[in-house]
Image (tube, rainbow, N blue to C red; front, side):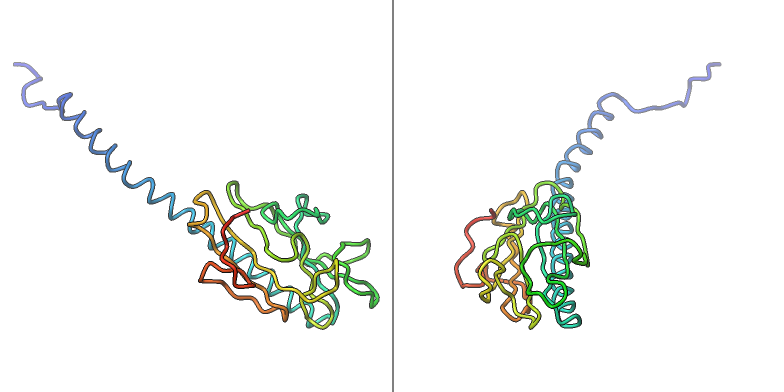
Length: 193
């Protein structure tokens, strides 16, 4: 009397059907997970940017000194490039009552540093490009001209303009998120870079 009676397994056809169904379900689910991950990454980056811009305004009010925010590839020095996705530095600008000049000089205190954003993200500006400065009065100025300014940060990822988010900082340092796809001057944003 054999021990094989009553044993049953899956046939090759049943196994192939199950694998095919699983592959179809994965093909449907994976793009959805990617969009969720991109949206989360976007929310985190915008939240970090909002936080540093708010901190900039607070630091200017508390210290009654210029505060600058610059793009930085090494998180030690201002890069002079408009590639904010490479990271940034927030620092007290202008020691001993000197006017803010948008340059991280020796002896100026670094308040906050942010590392590079994940690959595939661009964060660029309309307005002052590589340094944003609030003077001792809390006004946003272009450090190269000392004139009041406004700035729009444009966040995009691999999805291009469909993922565009814009953050606008007005002359009084007030930050808002643009929901209409326009920059601080009212012009439609047509590029991520």
